[in-house]
Length: 157
Image (cartoon, rainbow, N blue to C red; front, side, top):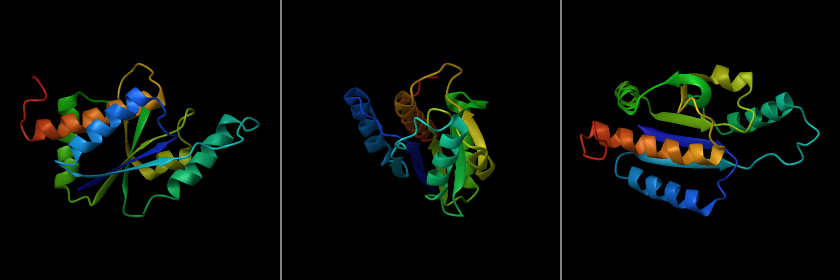
């Protein structure tokens, strides 16, 4: 199964970029991983939150194929432990999916049309993190999931 991560905006903090790079390198040993960072919208200061979400939705949807299976990383998603996420991820892989696309939206979340396009919403934490940190945390959890499924010693439980 191919895995793709789409994000709205780019990471700018060097310490986070280093972490993201490290986990993306590690993921290559377990899966075909692709990442697409979409540029943040320009000139949005006069737009409402809903208008911004709609424009971001158009941008996100333009990069999806009809066969892509979409999962949103969303503060209102379901909570899973690392073990539960790895089991969920394994089931998706065993179901014959060709591509699983995870999406991290912009600061205001997702437009309704993006929610409708997704099969699931996952919450990384009940705490709030910057979108830049969420990218690193998700990459680490994806890597952790792969090591759990391979029964490697990265995850201690």
